Length: 220
Image (cartoon, rainbow, N blue to C red; front, side, top):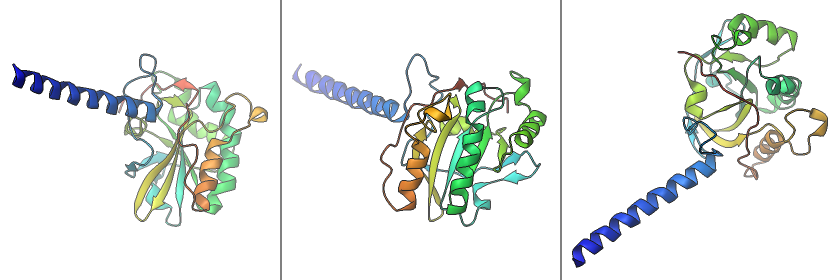
């Protein structure tokens, strides 16, 4: 009986440790169980991410390795049709203008299925990039990159730092704290993260909740 109790207690401790670990991971990724897709596990702050090769609106393939002088990247998963994404278009252009020359270029990636939203198809992506004056790559995610990263909302940002040949996640979440109006922004999360990295400091705010349209995964 004593041995059974000891074994049983060990199992309970193991289960408890596992549950605690899972809860920590859920919190780290900002996932709301029951309302957010559990497919959105992906990467956490501190994780190393792999490079990708996706088609740009100019027809060329783009990878992070193409930017040889980059110190890091601002990756934004976004799309054409979502009103939240549209509200951020001008801000994305300004972000790229401010930080691309400092070594943190912006790359936008559209993960949405055009079968669900025709506005998100490749031809409309090309038109949108021209109309809105995108200065950054706008890529078609036909390889499930957004799923791999754990992005679940349009738009959602990932700030990466290049450490040697590695790309390390330093921030995940919202671009700023005003999803509808640029005039009401009080906390520029992505800018703060990049500014910290540029001066060699750790990112203070590492995770925020991305607010936007739920992604409609593209059929690969």
